[in-house]
Length: 252
Ligand SMILES: C[S@@+](CC[C@H](N)C(=O)[O-])C[C@H]1O[C@@H](n2cnc3c(N)ncnc32)[C@H](O)[C@@H]1O
Image (cartoon, rainbow, N blue to C red):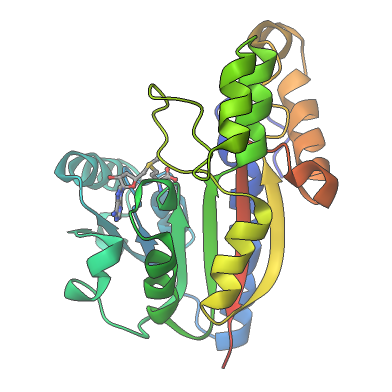
């Protein structure tokens, strides 16, 4: 890894990117192919699709938002990977209207299940899009992280409401329709016929630390990134993470 200071924004993506990159590298070794076929469902403006294309992979982004796909196209062009990124308007619940079954080495589903009416069907579709032994990278909002954040902001009733609500919402004004525990997310992945390769807690501390402590102290972002990476692996911290990441591997 580079010795250059990393921007604060990397706190949102670093843990997931490291896990994903390792999974892609393993798949490259296993298949003997340098360029993998990657599907990013709900890939939006390309936070993961563009870096994956920069590794040399061919990435298809399926997203219902024309604005996101437009921004993706521009971003891919700026990164010099326009020839390896394909944006397709579509929905994870109608995935096979726009992409083939069994066509991908890796499928990403990051920050999407929260907004989908039938999360189990979304995960099943993501898995059906994979080739045998392909990797599923699933990231979704964690219930416990939201409860903790509401409580630390002094919104105790909302924190209790999120804890009691089956969808993990803290009230009418909550912009997120659904949150998950690590057990729920892992259950969706194994019910869809995948082996669970790893579960990580994402943004355990980053959203709780006052920005001034991170922005003014030299080396603070790097130190916090290392702390996040260490805590991500520990099951004890899964229950308070803002997001949860599950890496699955499709059975043969
Ligand atoms: C929070 S953004 C995440 C974007 C990207 N995956 C990332 O991690 O940066 C959620 C994305 O999911 C897309 N989305 C919402 N509902 C969807 C659905 N039913 N099927 C596929 N994508 C959906 C949105 O258009 C948006 O681009």
